[in-house]
Image (cartoon, rainbow, N blue to C red; front, side, top):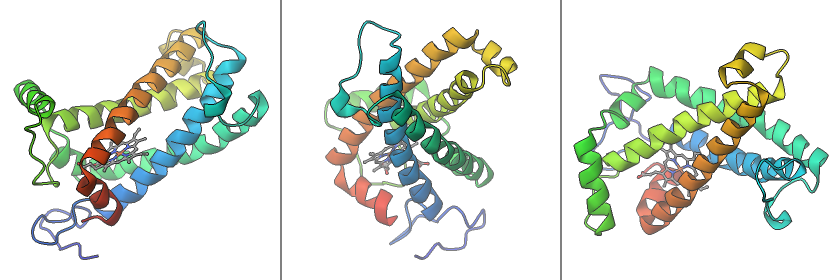
Length: 211
Ligand code: HEM
């Protein structure tokens, strides 16, 4: 892999012929996150089923762990992977300038224009190194949802030791709802995100090989 030396930072590849679109750390943390998220969601649904917040439960066929205790083991194992990997991604994203370069600025006018173009099939995908405004908004949004889901998860995992954090969410019960809605937001993101990746297969290739 040839990450050309840039004036800025070696963590950010330069754009040009044969250049790396997604540096190795972005790809690694992305795919570790994808697996950890799926384990967290599948096991979380089984945990939810033991004490539902709403008048529905998730079908057994899509949950992980088999029963409450099994699901909690999966949930508590994958949470370390999710949290540590997420911290690495956010720290490197901030320190390297990746977020600054790729995810901002987001102008409302661009979001509307790009959303219209996407819905009418006129959105260009010629430069994979540049995210469109809708993508930027969704990526920043899901990173925020990821932070909320980890913090609300900590609040309901250790409500006594982390009382201050639990209080920020309005108490244990409210934190459970926040945790649930953050999950729903992330699931909605994943559905749209995976459809988009399949519709533009070269973007998927770039997220795997870097090019
Ligand atoms: C499991 C199936 C998944 C697939 C197939 C997938 C695919 C992709 C692809 C192809 C890109 C690059 C888009 C482009 O170059 O235009 C990307 C970027 C991204 N994906 Fe996913 N993804 C998956 C899961 C997830 C999950 C679970 C999350 C978070 C909850 C996520 C969050 C992101 C973010 C934040 C980026 C931008 C990364 C950056 O540039 O720093 N993805 N994904």
